Length: 192
Image 1 (cartoon, rainbow, N blue to C red):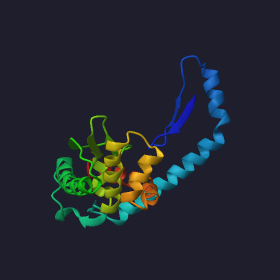
Image 2: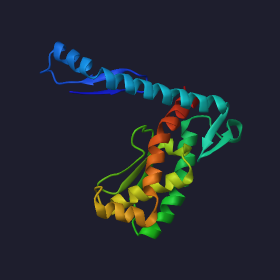
Image 3: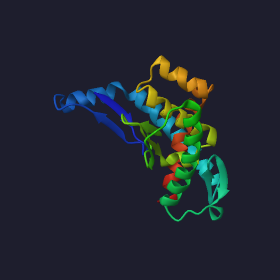
Image 4: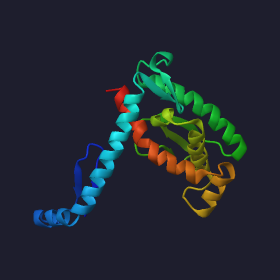
């Protein structure tokens, strides 16, 4: 059995059919402290994000910089996708040349948990949420995915290649994990 709390603070329990309702309830009861800690942590995070959104009314994060919505062509998420793709093509080309690794295709889709991926046939896909990220964080994701063209895993050789082009990749990775919730909340706020 496993448990998680989603972004709407719902407690989700995953269990096979082999477990009875009583066993599931016992599992929940045994994990009350963890549940309470996670609910408090997520509520604090939600409140922090809401304050950021309240402090920036009628604004959007445009590659890490707050800009007025009027200054950005934003009629729908296709506009975000187009802007992100244009930026990605330029930056992927730059890092592809430096790393001597070339993707077959670059695409963008809305994915709130995975910011980038590299398919087995070297097609790169990036989350639309990266539109909100500062360019140095975007560059880290690009470097990370390009490195997967050479190493299809997270081996030591993979991380050595990433670090060759992004020395502080650990810091950037941590920041991205922290900021992704804000990016998702901002997306939801813009496209309710």
